[in-house]
Length: 288
Image (cartoon, rainbow, N blue to C red; front, top):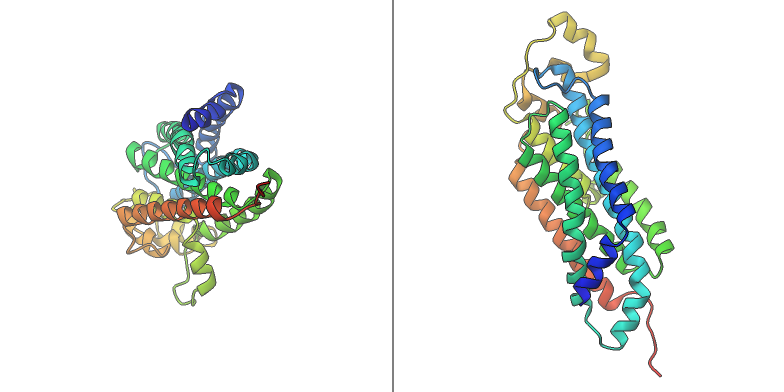
């Protein structure tokens, strides 16, 4: 019954569902039209920055949609759930599991649609399966983050007030600089720890690794053409293949499967925190 109620709450507003479906398709088409250098017929060095940006915007877009929807719905139910738990109608774990099985497949379906349209309209080298799997897992992780934030918020307004800055921070620390990284600089330890909790970071690294690993570029410029591109592309203007791109981006030793495992672990961590927040956090109701 709890699962059925959660499912009805997610599918009863068909207008919102259709809007989300349309947004997924239109945003994929928009990104494909903006990053035109990511072509089906050629893999050019000048498309490096566009490929990174295209994959990055996809992650940010899906993460925002999933997190904001989850925060709004989850926090609105918080008071009702607490009152029902006072009557021992169900446990925090039962409620969380019902939300997971009711919401995550639906949110993941929009990620599947986005990934399929993006793959069809662009020349991304990654397979359809890789794009779908990565975007889906990142969306599920963002939903889990929404559960975690919503579990400690008493109202939808509080959840949004907390969720928006958290999302912005995780987005900022998660994106990759397309111009490359300076390996001589000592990384900030605090920032490195924050990055570990960013679904966007793990998803972008997984997608970029899958896209460029083993990639070869067709020669589209001579040496002088590469020099002209230096102000715009930095060290990436001189790379010869995808593995050198990954080295320049600080992902030379990155492994797609290992990154996906880390993203799965992060999702589990958010769900555990969600359960703890539901079980021990939030306002308390006194029995009389």
